[in-house]
Image: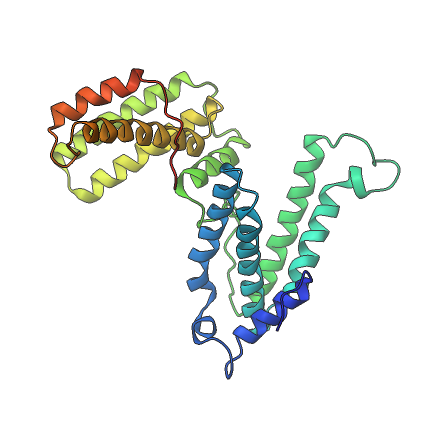
Length: 285
């Protein structure tokens, strides 16, 4: 087996790895469920390489992510559900259908695709998918098929902050939303009060619930302020990282370290870090 630029070689490699007799024991024992965490991790590693502008690492990371797609497709093919070709056909069909201004006839090509048309196409796709799901459920003997929800296509596997904002955006499309940001600040204050009450009077589960409600309200505020929660939190992470490194370096210059320093010493250095010139080194991750 030799490397190749052809996707068929990757499919051959995955088939060999999954061979029950001669394949890799680890690959053979995997399932959709066990592979999901790796799929998510690889997507994050792609994002990290892009953030670092590492064009040497990016092809490797994209390859790792592509391998995840091939892995899932191979397991589906073994179970008789679909194969890699079906995956490619599905995405090419979707892209052509969603871009009539590029791939359509002369009456729509070259025209700017209106948002309303895009939403109409997506709605049609969702209706078709719901119909196929209902048909599959009935074929499996499920007599009463659950009514589909507007929120069904927001994946549960998404990071919680991203999923929260997507759920809120979906609900907002049908008018379930605040008109402006200020009332959300009132809601945040209300949630803080409920969290305080839970901390003083309730158990761990209630505290966790109220803390989650507060986070959800903060995400909603970010949406109305046109601030992506994930990006805002990452910026805060980097700021914390940079300032804490300042503390560590300052202590090291004195022959000390953070483990031996007092909280007052570290707090004083933290205040210094807030006004110090940002260092050239960034979070290495």
